[in-house]
Amino acid sequence: MNTREMFKRAVAGGYAIPAFNFNTMEQMQAIVQAAVETKSPVIMQVSKGARNYANAQILRYMAEGAVAYAKELGCEHPEIVLHLDHGDSFELCKDCIDMGFSSVMIDGSHLPYEENIALAKKVVDYAHQFDVTVEAELGVLAGVEDEVSAAESHYTKPEEVIDFSTRTGCDSLAISIGTSHGAHKFTPAQCTLVNGVLVPPPLAFDILHEIEKKLPGFPIVLHGSSSVPMEEVETINKFGGHLEAAIGIPEEQLREASKSAVCKINIDSDSRLAMTAAVRKHLAEHPGDFDPRQYLKPARENMKKMYIHKIVNVLGSDGKLAQC
Ligand code: 13P
Image (tube, rainbow, N blue to C red):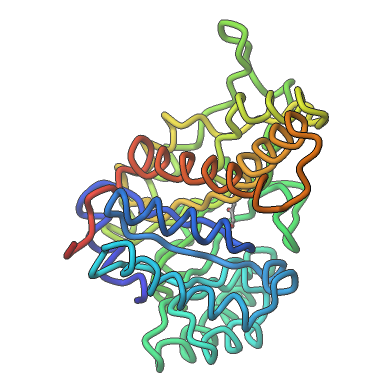
């Protein structure tokens, strides 16, 4: 399904839909299991990098498989969106739409304003013919996410959002209010030490609220919203990894954002961390194991636990299926 009804209900209900990236079968299974168990709608998203890694056809059939799998697990009416994350050209978006994606993002946020509008409008005009919803972005997030990277962030300018959403016709708007991609969102120098924990600077809620006032009820999207759980980072480092100064967005801030017009929250790095932590731990404790199922099973379980935690304790999308 596309995101239209899902977002309308999420904005009205004060919760956010999880948008989890996937590249592998284990991630897909964990996402579906978590969504079914919590009766949550879910957005399964693939980036250009994921398409290059796993193959576009394979990912498309995995998403079809996800719907069938959810039904097999007992969910008669699953709500699953297959979304392109960070489409960087009209051609890529068109290719995904032609392949059956129900939602695409066109990310022209790095372009000059008028070019961003022209590109987003071109994608919207094509996508809407097939009832595919479109996410566009205003403002630049820092960090690295697969093929997308920017050294510096620029907050979204609230004075631009009405003009941008009206002229592009986009269905949702990704904004920049201090989140960023990856597991290193802040340097320790940007954080304050509170009870031995590095607390990053708060998100720019004033900008979010100004945007909400300008576009009442319009679906807002937050990228770069992994929390980088310390226990996963510690497990990775304890079992041979080397992740230094990995800092994410505190979950209370995402909980607060979920109650606003923010109705889609993107999480990728936390899944990567959960998977890597479980694989490292398993292989360190079972050095004789070499069957991938032996270490991918705990990896899948650890990701599922994380997805359920996000759905229930952070985004509040549990129990929000229109029909069970
Ligand atoms: P994280 O790197 O914080 O998980 O963000 C993912 C994302 O925004 C994908 O578009």
